[in-house]
View (spheres, rainbow, N blue to C red):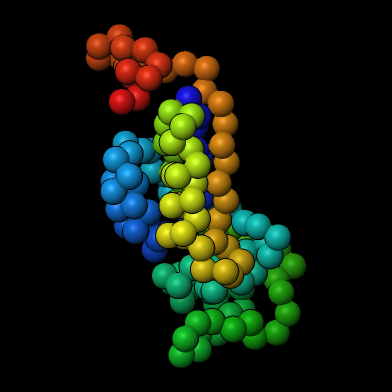
Length: 138
């Protein structure tokens, strides 16, 4: 078994849930998180089109018709961008197709598309029934 942890743009959540449902892996955990990458949150609005104006003005960004543009220089203090963190535990043989689907639905080609982490899972137990490992995640 593997745990797939995915950090994505907030507005990509509905599409991501839909593709996992279509692959017959609808069980997942979703968390609202804040984070940053190499840009230190400076390009926050381009990373997340749903970023509120008040957040972007805090980093001296101004709205433009299609996105937001930097007014002057990057902020000295890093900001954290709201994202969604999804966690799903799947059988080893499903990892490749799930990762490919996650990339396809979340890739825009711009900074802030997110990350996928894959970790081994030693075991799983369904509390209600006591089922273990593969049966617990089925």
